[in-house]
Length: 483
Image (cartoon, rainbow, N blue to C red; front, top):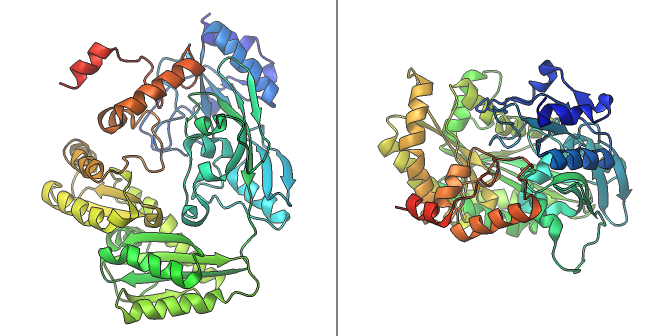
C-alpha cells in the first residue's frame, strides 16, 4: 500500500470518498485541458479535521490538491496523472460564522458558495460585491486562492481588496488564525495577503473575514455603441465625473464577440438596432436615497453623444432589460465555445494603454493569424481584457488553434510585455501559465516565490506543480535556459 493509499485509512471513513464517479468530477479541469488521477477525495467537516489531514499528509509525504467549484481556467485544482495525490474539498464547510453589520464584515467557512454569501449579506440589508459568472458554483476559498476579479472590481476592488483576515491550515498542520475583521492592523507582516492568489500552494484557506457594503438603492445600466476603441478611457472618465465615481462596471464587447454569440443563440437580441464595431456595458450604483443617479447617467449619455464618443445606446428601463444586457455579456464565452473554442489571452495593461493594445493586438492577429477571428471583451475599466483567437469558419479548429498557440500567442504576449502588462490578469497561474511566468515573469520575483514555497512547504506537498515549479532550477540551469 502506497502512502497515498494509506493516509485515507487513518481518517474517519465518513470524510473519505473513494467512488471514482465522484472523484472524476475533480480530476478533469473546467476547460478539459488537464486530466489527472486520485485514489480518494477527502471532505473534512471542520478546520480541525483539515489540520489533521494535513498533518498526516506531512508525516507520510503525501501531496494534497485543494479543489473547489472546479471553475478555474488554468488547471490549478487538477491533480497530476500519477494517482499519488489526494484531493481535499471543503464543500462541507459552508457555514456563515458571523455577520457584523455595524462593522460591515462577514466571516465564513471557505467552502461557502459565493451566491450564498450574497444571500446571507442581503438578509442583513448589506452587500458582498464580488460578482462572477460562476457564482452559483464557485466557493469563496477558491475565489481567495485565485484572487478572483469579477465585473464590479472597478468600484470595489478584486478579492484581495475585500479580504480582512484569513484562517489557514499551513503545510505542517498548524492553524494560522487571523480572522479578526479589523480595517487597521499594523502588527507586522500581513501574512494573510501571501495566501491570497497562492492557489493552495502555501496552505489551505479554511475561513475568511471580508468586507461588506451598503446595497445599492439606485442602479442605472446602459448599453452603448462607441465611435472608436481609443474613446474607451475618455468615456469612462466622463462617466465617473458625471456620476461622482459611482461606476461599478465598464465592460467592453467587440462586435465580433457579440456576433459569434448571436449566430449560435438566435433567441438573444442585439440591444441596439444598428451594428457598431465597439460596445460598452456600463453600470453605476448608489446607496443614497436622494442622489439622482438616473439624471447623472442621462446627462453623461447626452454629453457623450454630443461629443460623438457615443454613437448610439439605450439605458435599461426595467430590471428585465438590465438582465438582458448582462445576459449577453456573461454568455460571450459560450459563444466562443459554440464556434469551436478559442485560444484565450487573459491579459492586462494600463487602462490608458487599453485602446492602443486592442488596436495593435488586432493588427498582429490580422497579419499572422491566417484569417483567424477575434473575440475581444472584458473588464477594461480596470485594464483587463480577454483577447481570444478563434479559427475561421470551415477550418479544423483543433489544428488551427494549436498553430495560433505557437505562432500568434507569443506575439500577443510580447506586446503585453512591451506595454509592461501582465499575461495573467485574473485567472492565476495554475499549471497552465507556469511556462509563461518562466518566460515573461520577473526572475527576482520568481526566486522569492520559490523561497517562500520552500519556507512554508519544504516537503512540497501543497498543490505541487502549481504556481511554482516542483523542482527549483539550479543557477547553472537558469543560465542555460537563458541562452
